[in-house]
Structures are given as C-alpha cells and as structure tokens.
Amino acid sequence: MTTTSALRLEEITPRNFEDATGIRVRPEQEFAVAPVTKSLAEAYAHPAGVAWPRLIVDGERPVGFLMAFFDIDWRQDGTLFRSGLWRLNIAAGEQGRGYGRFAVESVAAEIRRRGGKELHVTWHTGPHGPEDFYLGLGFRPNGETSEGEIVGVLELS
Image (cartoon, rainbow, N blue to C red; front, side, top):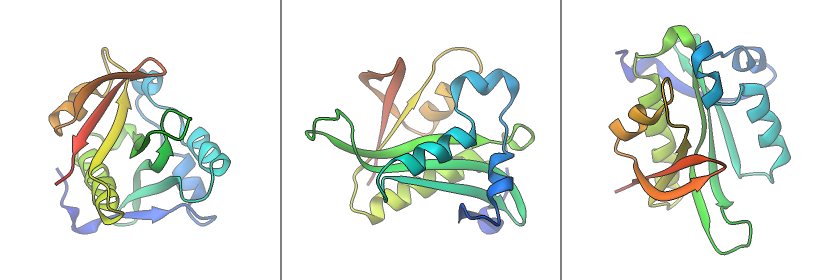
C-alpha cells in the first residue's frame, strides 16, 4: 500500500486530459466500469456542479480516475437527491496499492464538506467486479438496484 502523502486529486484540464483518458482498468474488469471518456462526456452533459471528475495522481504519476456526483435527482422526479461515487477507474498496473480507498475517502470528505451524510455507489456483482472492495470499505446494499447494479450506501459520520 502506498502512503497518502504523495496522493492528490486533480481537476481534469487540457494539461492532464490525455493522462485521464489513458487510464485503463484490467480487461476482465471492463464490464464493470465505463471508460474515462464516457465519464467525461457524461460530466459535460449534466448541469454544472453535479459531476465531479478527478484524476488520481501519486507524485507525478496518474494512477486512476474518479467521478463523484452531488445532489443528483436519483428518481428523476425531484423527490430523492443523493451524492456518491459515480465511477472509479484504477489503472490496471496500479491496483492493490490503496488508490481506490484514497478515492472513496476523498469523495466521502467532499460530501461531508457539502453537508452530506451518506455516500452512494452502485456495482456489478460477479467475478472481477468491485463488490468485495466496496463491502470491505463499509458500504452496505440498501435493497435497491439501479440499471441492474446493486446500490450501496456508506453512512458518513
């Protein structure tokens, strides 16, 4: 596991765009997470402030990408708003070093800063999916599914 002293999140800019779009998960994980290019397109398509795309950098090395969402209209009817982790892509050769945990902790800190009390995430089940990772961090399925994925929630205190 790496130390967090060199880890940081960077806003996606023209300077690091190629680094961000170059992040690739393992081939057997591609079913479980969209590529960074799709995430950036979705971020652009949503109103300002909803999507929060960030490059995960260790020192000067890009190691992953995350995209959080804040106060998204979960039911699309104005009755339920949630915040959480939309995407998490850790580069194939960088997995198992604590970068995913750092990403989740960073999103949790940002949600707390904005006054939120829960962090939501969805995941695919099955081999090579992220379920064990999220459960290990304390997420618990809340009984819902979204587009065929399990919805998990982490209570923030």
